[in-house]
Structures are given as structure tokens and as C-alpha cells.
Length: 217
Ligand SMILES: C[S@@+](CC[C@H](N)C(=O)[O-])C[C@H]1O[C@@H](n2cnc3c(N)ncnc32)[C@H](O)[C@@H]1O
Image 1 (cartoon, protein in one colour):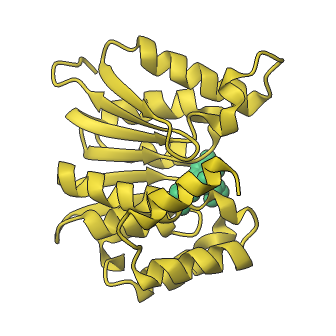
Image 2 (cartoon, rainbow, N blue to C red; image 1 turned 90 degrees about the horizontal axis):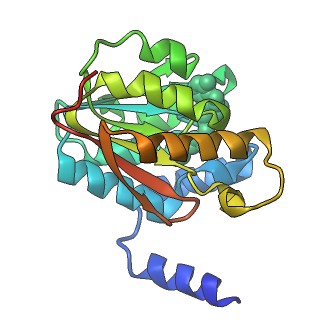
Image 3 (tube, rainbow, N blue to C red; image 1 turned 135 degrees about the vertical axis):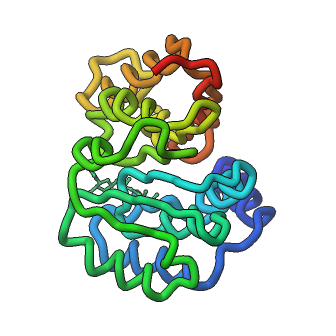
């Protein structure tokens, strides 16, 4: 085992365990779906739940539902009456997602939209959401950010996943399209006077972005 593997195991052992239903969902995601590693998993899932508990949002948006794992972590942190709108483009995942939402005591807080993230986002009014989790198509992260930011209340938060993109962001060789889009996104956020942000080197990189209260739309 590498030192990094040992540290990961230690960090997970030092973090509250995930509920049994989510452990089951993680296993089902990895055995029944292609690219199961896209699932947030134990550590990031517990962080999502805790961030939601800290911010206490009434309305949350998630782009990129996949198996529903992160959606159920966010829902677990939501107070009764608060809601999560989550968007997934792959309609073949719908039955799988709904099965797990139905099994969870927090599933009733989640509204699933099957469609393209950029189209669904436009259905909502500006300043509608208190928080968003961006985790869909990496190639459209810059456009997705520009579409989501107006929908966030001043003082609200955007969490963006995969902002280290498996370390490719620090490569000097020519970049693949997805890496370039992540680089563009990170540069866009870093230069954006409407927000402040912290990039956390957790897992594949998670950036926490706060829309400044005085930000103009
Ligand atoms: C990394 S996975 C999401 C993982 C999930 N949020 C979690 O943490 O467990 C990305 C998902 O985004 C979906 N996706 C890709 N492009 C999309 C788009 N334009 N609109 C909505 N969903 C999209 C993919 O089908 C995939 O299921």
C-alpha cells in the first residue's frame, strides 16, 4: 500500500461512516453501472452532507445525478421542507436513480429532472437556489458556471467537483478537451470578482465558491 492509500484509509476511518443504504448504493453503482468511480463515495458524500447542514439551504441544485449517491447525501443534510433539484441527461439511469430515491427516508426531498443541465437550469428564476453542486459534463463547466451563478442568491454557494481532473490541470503537455475546459473554468472562477473561492484537494478536487452578497448579476 502506498502512503497515499494509507492516508486515504486513515481519513475514511476517522470520518463518520456512511449510512448502510448509501454503502449499498455505492456497491450497486460500482457493480451495476459503467464508470462507477464517478460516484462521490464515502468521504465526499459526508462532506456534502455536512456543508449542507452548515449552510442550511432551502433550495439546492445538482447537475449530474449519476446513480443518485451525492443527491442522497445532500438530501440527508437538508432540513424538512427544503428541496434538491437534480439533473441527469442519461435517461437510462432514471429507473436506477428512482429505485434508490424511493428506498431512502430522504428521497422525498429530491426532484429528479431528466434532461440537459444547461436547458433545465434555464427553467428557474434568478436568485432561486441557495446552493448548487456542479458535477455534469466537464467540457461545459465554464458555460454551466455562467448559467448557474445568476440562479444563486447573493451570499449563496456553488460546489464544483473534479476541479483537479485527476491531476491533469498541472500537466505541461497539450491538454485534452475536458482538461482544457476544467482549466478554463478554474481560471474563470479565479478571476471572477463576483465570487470568492477555495479549492480543496479532496479526491479529484472540490472548489467551494461563494457568490458575494454585493455581486451584480
Ligand atoms: C460525475 S457523474 C455525477 C456523479 C454524482 N454527482 C455523484 O457524485 O455521485 C456525472 C453525471 O453527469 C451526467 N451528465 C453529463 N452531461 C450532462 C448534461 N449536459 N446534463 C445533465 N447531466 C449530464 C452524466 O450522465 C453523469 O451521470
